Structures are given as structure tokens and as C-alpha cells.
Length: 257
Ligand code: SAM
Image 1: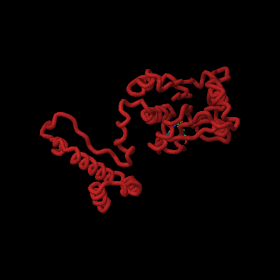
Image 2: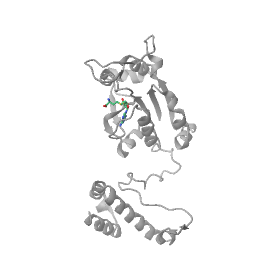
Image 3: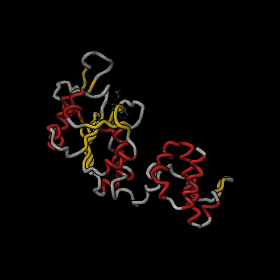
Image 4: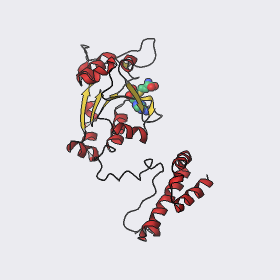
């Protein structure tokens, strides 16, 4: 997968793109990143990229010209999308007005060959950028940050770990919170007893079926306590597919909701 990032602050990205799982995947050639400095594409003689909004209002806006030019520069493919051709890549503007990023969207984006991420600043971008190019707006939550760089990093991290081959084991995210439709059960590592705090006995029993049922029940109870709406929609989709014991456990937790 190739990810292009358009930003006013390219210096924020190298650490995130070269460290950990994402960095290793880039070294292995599974991910390619390209960071474009929007300011490099301004035609303004003072290298300015922002201006005041017509009609008044607080703050400045990122102007259309340097963004159009940056999109042209990263490849005619992205620019052609403005002409109504089928988009060869997904264009994403990080924005608090957008569709909120969740696991479903991350999984969808992980299947794309190329993403172009536009990081806004100031009060956002000139609307003509969003009208001329098929940008989808994506938010990382109902709060406002000063720029789109941290949202872009969050999206990159959530999406890239779902690209096949990026995580060591393809199974490692199967049981994670949200992926399975339930929040993840609590987990413990050695030692079995620490400062008088003991690991639940069942996890030391070696009985795989008992451990599986315990983990499942913990996931149900945690989801019921923290995200009851998530538990209800999980149940609607999965209850009928469960074996007898798991179904009984799930029904008991659902009755307590
Ligand atoms: N005036 C804009 C509004 O009310 O929608 C907010 C602009 S914000 C101060 C500056 C930039 O930060 C935005 O253009 C966007 O790229 C980014 N941003 C801020 N909060 C975000 C969020 N929750 N999700 C994604 N991007 C966000």
C-alpha cells in the first residue's frame, strides 16, 4: 500500500513512519510513504499558504492553490480524479466534520492500494479543494485538534496494521477489542502472583476450553458494562452461531443489561 501525506508540517512524520510495526513493514516494502510539504507548492512570493475567509469569520484558511499544486505534483493519477475519472486511490481529508474512523472503515481502507491524506490547519481548507477532488472527510473523534497531522498518524497506524502481512501473525488482531465485535477480555503475564495480586486460577489450569469460555465471558461482561450498544449489535449478528455453552453465557449477560 502507498500512502501520500500532504501537510504543512512534514517534520512531524518521520518518527511515526519509521518506528515499530509500521516502520518494519515499510522496511519490508509492504508500505510506502511519501510526505509532501504543501508550502513547497505555493506560488505566493512570501510562501504564504493561508488567507482570510470570504464573508468574515475567525481565523485563516488553507488556500486552494498550494493544495491543487501539491495534488498535481504527487501524480497525475490523483489530479485526474478531479475530472470525474474513477478514483485510482482514496483521497481523505482529515476533518472533525467527517465520518468517524472506526474498525470497519480502517479495514475498508486497508484493502486500498493507495491513500492520499490531506492534513488541514488553521480553520480548515478552502471548500473548492473538497469540491474539485473526490475527498472523503474522516474524523478521529468528536473533538478538535489544531491540525490534521495527528489524525493522519492515527489513521495510518489503525489502517496499516490491518494490511495483510504487516502484523507478525494474521491472528493477532482477531480477538482484539472491536475486531471481534466485543471488547477484549483482561490478560495477564508472568509472574502468576505479584505483590499479593494473583492471576485468575482458570488461566493457569491448562484447560483450553475452560480458558476459552472464561475469556469469552469476561469479554461479554466488559462489553456489557462499557459498551452495551456494542454488545446488543454483536448479539444480533452472532448469537445464533455460538455453541451451546457460549450461547448460554451470552444470554445470561444479555438478560442483565
Ligand atoms: N474549523 C474546523 C471545523 O470546525 O471543522 C476545524 C479546523 S481544525 C482547528 C484544523 C485542522 O485540524 C482541520 O482542518 C483538520 O484537518 C484537523 N482536525 C482537527 N480535529 C480533527 C478531528 N477530530 N479529526 C480529524 N481531523 C481533525
